Image (cartoon, rainbow over all chains, first blue to last red; front, side):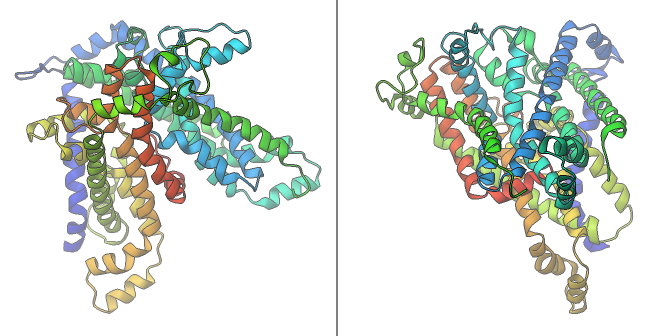
Length: 286
Length: 272
């Protein structure tokens, strides 16, 4: 009993001081006006009322929702690629390493490289598109495209992680299932839809949950591709976590920032609960 | 499956790999170009005149080695701290009964589900009130305590057979000795996975270092690179050189420790 306390004490002290207490203080501050200097005052639901009437907040949630939906398109892509990698014996580890490179590259560096590729005047993307007679655009600076351009990078960055998790799921599928269906004359495409996808669905579900949570928290790309270079498209392209950062740590309106964070928590909880609801209709636990 | 041809599959995978690699290749080609050459339309693929100017500009304007030291130092502090704290707590949750254990573990799991932004305002307040802004410990301290790490270590210890533990106990070892000499060595794969995951997260993190390094002193690499981009907005060779130099250390570590990285990701799924 005494020993257990010694083992558990450091983690518990850290949990309470650095997580539980900050969480409660964010909750309390969301009901306060917290000036940068001087004491905070309780303002009841004012922050939340202001938030509901704030066009910028709605815009940010809209951007985050759009980004999340777009990044989800990367999951079918990851499932197909994971299945393809599983089919080959030679070169498998080379493919894994190549797909994983963006994961171990600084996200800030990734944002810098893609900002250059997306450059409207002399970027690589517009050049490649010109081979096919497609008009170029200012992919980052034109707010019509910004979120789409970011989502493409988000998919590219997240693929490596999804492939590893899905690959582990694929290896758990017994080979005998494939052999039996091959004897029945099932081709690869049929096997993919009738064996791989259903048997892999728990892993696909897990990856979906992680992807949605991460996408709703997108911050780095916005900061590096727009804010650090004072791109005017920032005004139309803020995500919810970027808006939280700006309110709480640039403008130091910590009460309002706290309210934004609480709403983010509620949105993530609803999104996750919804997915657990929906999984009953598509996730197959054999 | 033996008689099936695999070359169409390789063709598809190679096409996808090209998309993964082209941005890096373009970055590396750009590094050796001059700034005017980069602005040419249509772009040149290979550098017309080979230039190392970008590296010179980068190293003469950015304190790379101090940023590298800050990134590395905070990573070591955070990883060592988190692995130690999480291993101890995980062992207690798995093996040492005490009153309120399930309740406390439930609290850890609850914190696991809360997005990190909910803690930032309070964590910032603590760091500021302790006078730690712009210091190396500020970067590492919150990350030294992790509900996720505790959860992962608990899983590892729960899956171990009790026999060795009992044998050691009968030989008169106290709980810490059992933990240190018997159980911890068996948990090595999980310790490696947790190390790699925490290290990756620490190295890549931008938001927390931005918040606790207001003056720009003791900046880790991501914050410094973001500053470089603000300073040299369109000098793409310099920007690409900075992005390359700052990314290479972790890429090298990954190439050496691929198995640990993949295992770490597979055991958890690191996101956000």
